[in-house]
Image (cartoon, rainbow, N blue to C red; front, top):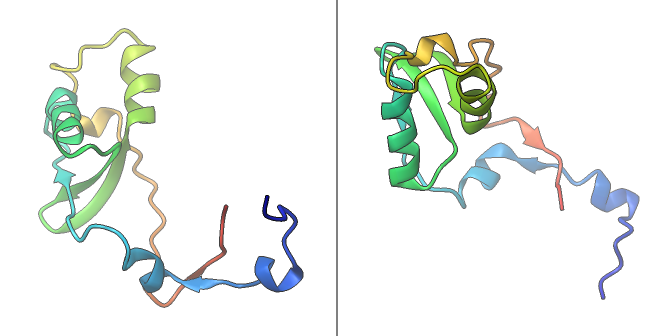
Length: 106
């Protein structure tokens, strides 16, 4: 079994975001704020993802996750078909550039 304790060098070994993203799919899946939550959920299911970007034109206005759905629709007894994404999306989004570094996690 590998040693679960990391050395200081391992803990401080930050990877550039562009290297991390290089292993990910290049596809970007998005919805509009006026789209129904049901349509957003179908898109997530179709692509096997749990998170969508919310765009108004080409401007980022929010993100939508399965957690948003669970907490803001299901637990509040709302209808997925009748609720627009804008009502449950997270609109305070922090963005980073590809030059940023991300600490390793495992």
